[in-house]
Amino acid sequence: MDRKLVGNFTENIHDEDYERPFLSKIVTASSMINDSLRDKESLNGYWNFQIDQYDTCIRSKWYEENYKTETGRYLPVDFDFDRWGTIEVPSCWNTQDERFYYYEGPAVYTRTFRYENRGEKRVFIKFGAVNYEAKVFLNKKYIGMHRGGSTPFYLEVTGMLEENNRILVVVDNTRKKEAVPARNTDWFNYGGIYRDVELIRLPETFIKDYYISLVPNSGYKKIRIKLEIDGPQNNGTAKLEIPKLNLFEEIKCVDGKADVEINARPELWSPEKPRLYDVKITYLSDEIHDRIGFREIRADKTGIYLNGKKIFLKGICTHEESVKNGKAVTDEEIIENFKLAKEMNCNFMRLAHYPHTERAARIADKIGILLWEEIPVYWAIDFSNPKTYKNAENQLTELIIRDRNRVSVIIWSVGNENPDTDERLQFMSSLAQKAKELDPSRLVSAACLVDHSKLMIKDRLVDYLDIIGINEYYGWYAPDFNDLIKVFNNSNPQKPVVITEFGADALQGARGTYDDLGTEDCQYHIFKLQTETLGKIPYIHGTAPWILYDFRCPRRTSSLQLEYNRKGLLSEDKSYKKPAYYVMKEFYASIND
Image 1 (cartoon, one colour):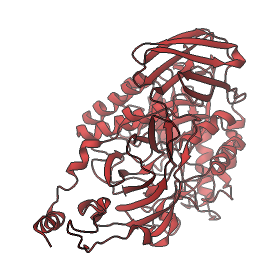
Image 2: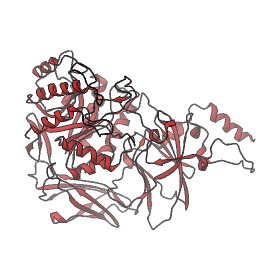
Image 3: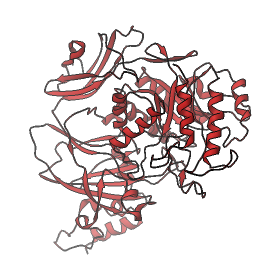
């Protein structure tokens, strides 16, 4: 073996700084493309797959596919892409093979695909979501890395494609102290490429982003449209068409930007009447279609107002999970969740604790249910680390850019149950300000905790929020339920409060007395106490108990839990309604908005 190869071999096994070269191409929100209803070609299907516990693909540069020396001598290699087993994309590897159920670490995905140019000037590959870190290679070349397991990212591959192509992705779901979320969470750590992978063909100059909304305080008579054009011909005229509003407007773009207000009187969207309009935007040869709704959401000390009318948020929390598919949920499973919530008389759902698939908000737009969307700034992350903040801000930005045209989304949440420290206050207040900068038309919140020592609602972050989210488990983790009444009597919040979590565990079919923890009777009793109390507090303007259905969580190991969080109002397969489900159904039926 020649000296160069010997040197590479030695470097591969001894270099513990082997990831550094990949840090130069971090893919961030600046690469986002609003690809709404564009024609896309699926790269889903069966990919070759191999877990790679020691990260050897990166260390030994398998992606370069060096099978021979320069003199033609064959080299011993530790991979055989086309003879590996296969796994479906999108999916979570945990649900595809019982050998991978608890696996955390690097894994390699690869497939080949054919490409034929059809006259497009630019080409992108979109990943809907990869948990948690993805390093992407195309035809033996590194093209970028993305961090964050729940938001989409885009890679431009213009000029890199051939007739026959190999794409390779190293996915790593290792939990890390500096990550968002960090090492300790209360849900299952799925791994894999679990949302769609798609090829997008575009002209040289195209519509990169758009944002259409009702102008606040305009008497519902004006809409605003912001455009971003990418490409060399970015000074020109875009056309906006909303036929049902008789709108056919020309919009001047200067240096790729436009921001205009247009007179219009749309029928307002609401959960009772989820009105959507067909929208078409064109610029040169590029064309985008979408279905957009218009509504106004605002809050003050007196309450939360949808289209000028006070509303009580009759909510429920949910994770993105199914027994069969893990996080790779189907449209049918999303629709089932919303229908079960509506059957419980809900008008609102908290999508916890990370961005759910973009399809959820689109379905909510159509079905008519209000949404709280959240990033996984969860529990005690590394608040003093500037890189951790940058990561969190990027995930927030990707979420907002992705979903700010979805009328059902009314709240951006910047975190959940975080300790009230100076570092956390700086971190999360900055995120709240960033959310308002990106989207001033929605409310910003976070799920905060009660000050148990003083028995009152007190959190310095409240000053930066529009509404106060409170997680409380009186009757369960805090056994003296009377303390909850003291909390409410001791508090005088100057902003509306939404109870974003309360609840208790109950194993399906487990019966006993009200004092028997983990039984349906105990859960039922706690929900009765909670609803009877919450309904009397004038500054509470919404509730979202924890949680719609039981979900996987390996930290929950008792004989009643069996590695599930059992606080669901439904069983994990959603086939069984626990008695507490009907408590919430009755409570919400009693509330007149």
